[in-house]
Length: 389
Image 1 (cartoon, one colour):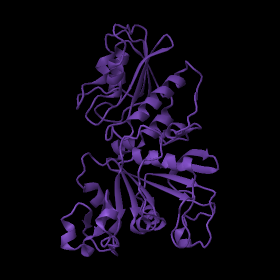
Image 2 (spheres, rainbow, N blue to C red):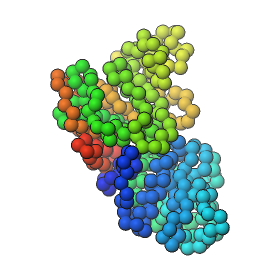
Image 3 (cartoon, one colour):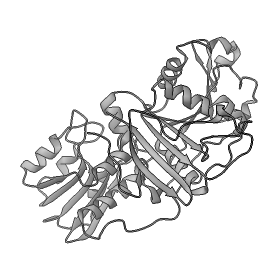
Image 4 (cartoon, one colour):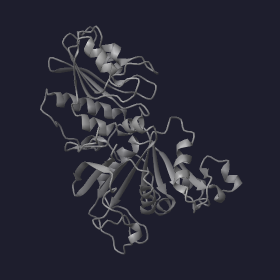
């Protein structure tokens, strides 16, 4: 399926207003399939930051036009959205004639959890509405076929593009069998990301930054280059987005020449730094901060060494997604290597003096990407692209 432009107000992070403190309701007429699926999507956003590598799914159970219960996917290996919603039903309630809205096809296999499709059987549920099917070969339409065969009316495709955008890392990983890499940058109207000295605070406004912080929660790891780290001292946290703020991302610095080797450990607290092995002294190799890439800083294999080193590092959970935030040179290098699967680009109104071509990037990721989001945060413009399948 081709990645399509999304309805206004939606992005790769879900309902855009739900990533901010100020929220706008409703988006769809009450009681419609779009309204209830929109509610399931909002519920699924509560899984951001905790469910990966499982998909963040939302489920809403409705009867006679009134909501009975809702639920979202819990932490990895914990209950799925459907199981949480059914567990939240009022005691003794009848589901005869009820409708269930779920953002992703209910699973039909046993993994860390039993099949969610079993929950629907023998309950009198009249209708199941699903946004998109699950590409997992253990599911892949089997759950829908099973429920349809039991007499439940099944409808698919409601808010499909919007749900697929929110589930992008999961869907892309399932299809491509690799870690998903995305880029994010903020540019001036001229295309510059910083002034000639590398200063870039603040090109965008508070709403744009809040959306970026939600993205940091969505993706597993955030990467910046060594020069960006030294100039900006970024926190790379989720401090300004709307709650729930359920995790801070893994924070990575790409430092092939070892520019950070003499930084005090306190300045690098919470960060992991990838350094070319030839630059890394023996006493630094034993710590938790510096990680060697076994190529030289001028090697033609540097990008691949960076990617393979990061993806093979021992983390608590599988690394499903990585977002690279800058600077311009790192974004350009990785973009030219074709590493990115999606892009988030903000254009702000801030203008700096003394600009340099080195700090300049295009307004988009180039050919091979489909535009999916165009959103205005006051005066800032957000555009998002996804690489064609």
